[in-house]
Image (cartoon, rainbow, N blue to C red; front, side):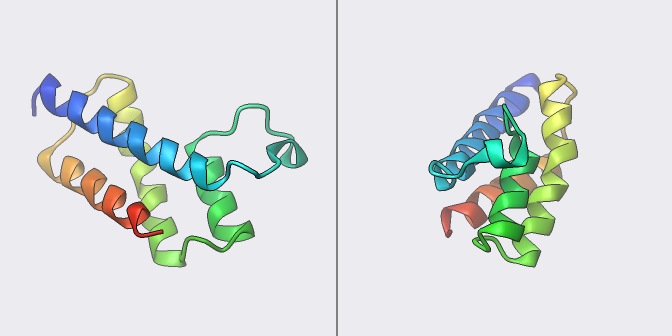
Length: 95
């Protein structure tokens, strides 16, 4: 893949992160002793506490974490990883 692909992946990951955060705009993360919650925290709360995400969607979103890490550390991702990111975006838009 190319750096342009990673840029597109980053854009989509940003949308996913913001959408999940927006679903939790009123959630008190201080109760979990989290000052700066991240993607993993959002998935956990939406899945285990708020019950907004089912088991399959949560599993897919957790699989997204290593791909997000590759993108954030500027490692090139594969075409299938980019497709998976898009699938995750489509999943969360249905929430």
